[in-house]
Structures are given as structure tokens and as C-alpha cells.
Length: 287
Image (tube, rainbow, N blue to C red):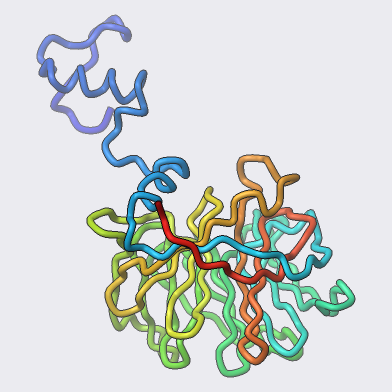
């Protein structure tokens, strides 16, 4: 136990009499009744909350095409440009950067990261691929064409998702905070906090900037939230429930958003999913 205010008795199962009764009750509730935790964000609780926001635009989806996807790839970041997918895959000992021909499902190039790096989000800014890592506080910069490593930069928080708006890099760290960085020196310019109504939405993961809004996967859910980059307000959400039924393991969740701006095509996939999907959003209203 941290600190020295409370001490354990000789019997490790007996609570010292000096510990306030209220604290004891709270600890027992948290251990044996986790559902009592205030505002715990689970996929079910988040879905229920979003459905209740009648003014919030809800989208479902139509599958336009399904492409093969490496079912071993623990997808962390996804980018599309001119028929090519760039994909960042994670896990220690398995992290990589891949350049993929979408039409042929052919890996054209692949760079494997050192085993002590866990790769995360990926973006393409002015011909440079920027790949975050999770706990190492370092990002790798690659030449888009050769995948040659050309530089690095560091940051003092977890690396999760990254995109850009043409002027600033935009990053997530798994919380509700989204940071905007100067792409010249990677200094932080501003922050927003993601929220829907009065509720903070955390576990913001993979990011994609599309038509003036930030699209973000919410970790461990089937949802993408659409965020106002100025205020952090959730403007709408995409319910992708049932898109990949075969991927039912806890960690094999939706993660990966890529946008073809020239042809207005949206691609999504997930960790170890056997398919990458081109989808069209269908507008609906929350009941």
C-alpha cells in the first residue's frame, strides 16, 4: 500500500482499526462490485450514453468492398494514398511498418521495428511517414517511397493515434486529450478534451482527419466518434457493430481508419482482422 498513513496488521486479511469506515466500504465496493464505479466507460455504457444523445448524429454503414487483410497484423495505424496502404502494426517483437498494394493485397515493403518497441499510430505528412510508439516516447520518421528511417522525435506521454490537418500534427494518448503539434519542431501548440454533452469520452485511439473533423476509434469498442477539432465536442458517431463477426477476441477490436480524399472512400479494419473494408456511412438519428 502506498504511503504510511495506514499500516497493515499482523493478519493480512484484517483491516487496521485506524482506517476510516468509509474508505473500507469504498474499497469493498470497487473490488466486489466494479459496476458501482462512477462513470466507468465500457463499450456498453458508452453506447447507451451516445444513443441517448438525441441531437447527436448517428451513422451506421454499408459495405462497399472487402479486401484481404493479414490476420496476423495487430493494426495500430492506417493511411491511404494513390492505391497504396501504409500500415503500422503493434506488439513487442512484432511491430512493423508496411507498404501494401491494396488491389493485390501484396506487401511491397516492410520495416520491422526492434523488439523493444510497440508501434502505434501512423500518418503521412508532406511525404514523411510518422509512426508513434506506445511506451517508448519516441516517434520514427520514414521516407514515404523507400521507407528509409530519416529521423526521430520524442514526446512525454503515451503514443496512440496520429493524424494531421495540413498544418498541425494531431495525436492521442489513450485518454480524452487530443494534442496538436507543430510539425517543424513537434512542440505542443494546444489541447482539446473529447466530450459528448457533459460526459468526457476517453480511450481515444487511432485518428484520421476527414473533411475538417477528427474521426477516432474508441479503444475496445465498435465505435468511431467524429470530433470538432476546435472544441473537442463529439459531433456524431459511427456504429460499426457486426462488421467483422469472426474477430471476437477481447483485443482484436476495430482499429484503423484510412481515407481516400480524391475518391471520397473510407476504409476501416481492426487488429488481426482478415478483412479491410471500404464502407459508406448511412445517416440515422439516435432514438
